[in-house]
Amino acid sequence: MKLRFSIIGLALLVISGINLYATKKKAMSIRRYHQHQFFIDLLHLKRIGVSDNRIEKIKLIMNDIRENGAKNLHLIRQKNVLIRNEFLKKKLDHDRIINLIKEVIELKRNQLYFIQMKKYQIMKQLSYEQRSQLYKSIVQKRKRFWIRMRTMFRKRRKPVYPASEKRR
Image (cartoon, rainbow, N blue to C red; front, side):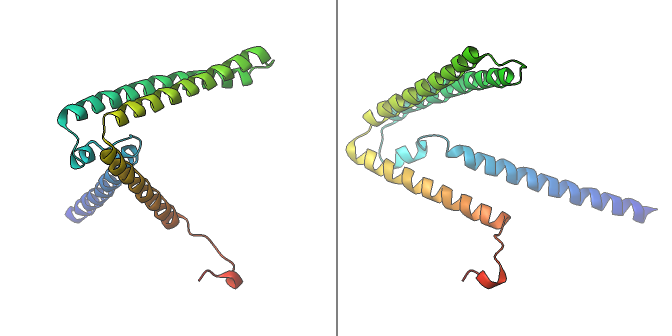
């Protein structure tokens, strides 16, 4: 009887450990993915010699970008749901669908314009040397990100080649 309970307890312990490991790994990958969604790494700004006052201004600008982006994304999703609902109706209302599509395009255009103007405001805060160092680090970060993505997908699904066309 004790052996049965110890086996069940051990099985539960192993399953919960695997579950915790998988959850932690997924949370870490999501965290890493979202780090690349933002424009500037604030720790890197200190490394390239940006003053604390300017870093605070840049933080405010980046918060504006995030807040506006979230608000616009919500509006775009709402409009897309309305478009989908119009497509599912028995009789299509051509004018309403076209107007909704134009509204989505206008929201995306305004969002892109807003982000680019905020990036310009951030770059105005930096000197030429700081901008060039920041640009180099952003390019390197993107390269590392895409290298990680490629290796991650190669591990998951390996291409199958015919025996006559093996890769060298």
